[in-house]
Image (cartoon, rainbow, N blue to C red; front, side, top):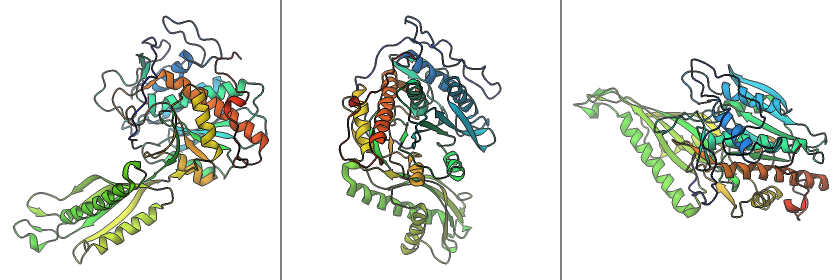
Length: 468
């Protein structure tokens, strides 16, 4: 996932106790952790016990902490990947009475499909998330897989991206499933490998037939803004072949590294042109050369060089066309010749999406977030990429991204954390949004039908703090 340039909003933090009893120690590559406790109330020091069924506060934080304590780094040289986190998610969902099924993607790497009971024969409201996290890396001041609460924030790898969002979605589904007045189906799809090659969502698309969704809500961290558009991503690999020669006579050869440098300059010029046209919106394609490898030594004219490039795509763009156009532009620039050849391949692609801001889904979502205690929430587009584009393309469903935490300042960093206040607000907003969508489906055959959209407060919305 790339980052967004929007800074987080202040003033959302509350003080909470600093430890989470009942959360197991982090797993290691040599031993799996003991079974994690089920989703019952967990008492934190200095607080009253959670009311059974009350997800606001300690119970929600404890669920997120248990998911953090199940490491799911990707890539993982020890080979555990998402196994522990998927096991933990399955336990939590099963304990709540949800229907859970696995979809194998690779050995030990399964997608999860979690369904909350709803007997209304209607297209479901679908939450989308992923179970993997980026590697912890260096620079932490605490163990990244021993979650703690300090200053109203839950710390640990994945707190923001995106085990906090998964916990909020599960809590919301539990509240909705226990409400006798709510009968609409709600589902959670949890994929593996989102942080690397997106093999999980691709397997989902291969095996799951086209379905109708009322809406797809991606629970990635948006600082609780409603994101209606994501750029896509394409990872391109270029191989440049030249002619080796003695370094004392460079003209006898053809330097693949010099040719590669000209390609980098070509990409940078196009990138800067796009940025100038976009101005401050940042809603534009981008090029980023992430890796260059070439040559054999200083005394040899290099006959090979490889470049790995990230290309952020607009929703209408196709990765195969981007690669084809790039190779054509390299030829047109005179970089290739009888002695220099350039070939390319597409290593990974992730489609973007753009939902109309006037569609009922973003408007209902914005009302839901504001009614959940975030009055300054807004609708915007994202510079990051996510898997929502896959479902939007496959199922034609209105899609948004909405989740706790900030992708720019909190995700993919040492001491990753999420505000407990944001976890609570996200879960409440998910409940309000699902209730509003279900109410609308009950009155309109098509989500995009009627122009007048009732705000969530006009709907009989289940409460996060109600007892079962």
